[in-house]
Amino acid sequence: STLALAGLIMQQMMQNKFVSPTTAGTMEWAKLGILLSMIFFPQENIIIKLIFAVVLSIAGTFLFVKLVQYIRFTDVIFIPLLGIMLGGIVSSFATFIALRTNTVQSIGNWLNGNFAIITSGRYEILYLSIPLLILTYIFANHFTIAGMGKDFSNNLGVNYEKIINIGLFITATITALVVVTVGTLPFLGLIVPNIVSIFRGDHLKNALPHTAMLGSIFVMFSDIFGRIIVYPYEINIGLTIGVFGTVIFIILLMKGRHNYAN
Image (cartoon, rainbow, N blue to C red):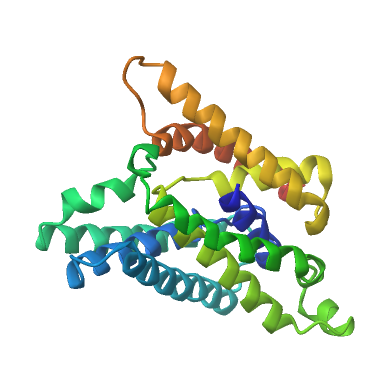
């Protein structure tokens, strides 16, 4: 559910319904951070992995935002495509490093979300997302105003750049927490906020609880489906969410292009 909230904030900040930690490359930067921590500090605990993942997630997310602001796309469809391309480059670079350092097997757990890797001493770091969620609720109205544009925000006395930075920091940190704990859960931060916005609108504070609830239900449904479809075996939660998320993302993408064309 926290990853769904991260996607909701990111979409509000970027004024684009197709942006999320998946399509902005944030998850790939987090995986690169985990890989680097395993290379330089192989014997250290998960906190070191978390620090590396958070730092690179924040840096990668801000790089994506700066590229979007610099290029200034006229078609909203190109923004997530830029993020996917950037994420692909980072992922390829991480794979190259893993092959050169013989850490492919070690990094494999984080390439696909897997609840089986959650053990005592690992899941506790998700508690760090609680203050971030509180911070999200406090700044929810500011995020909503910032989503209306820089000029509109400044006219209402909201520091646009500051709010954008706070929002991106929250989303990148939440994404890193989830990737370190569970692994990659693709498209969760994309499809859930879009579905909620259809019924609840774009007011962030009103959409927060519904996004969190729907995100939890979607993950639970995907996990149950992955456990029963090949029983007694199990499909990784990341793969299940990826399949469902890809289909829904394509539908939203085509629908969005049709709406903007009209």
